[in-house]
Image (cartoon, rainbow, N blue to C red; front, top):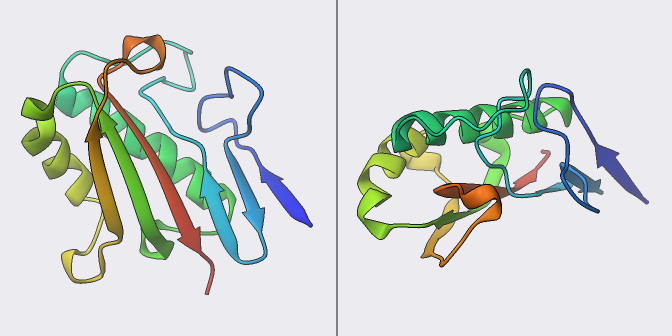
Length: 127
């Protein structure tokens, strides 16, 4: 049976999906964008600030499922401009131990929800 994960510490879904689904010991997160869950407003001042908000939203979802970034085994990063990759990677990387960092792909896309610059999703395993 799957368990729906929801926390008010991350943005509420803006469509027919959930923040995350836990099936067995595997957590599948929906993509997070830079919405401040307290205000409902986008945080897009700079790509660094935007990425930080995305990672904080993801941290809240992981926490609600009883996990941390150490449990993450796979991430997908969608970005609008590959020229922002270095800045995004610096913020993203600060949340992981480089020696145990998850597998990842980074893809440049034509458009993201609410015209944000970055969206990140994750798969995590509860040991």
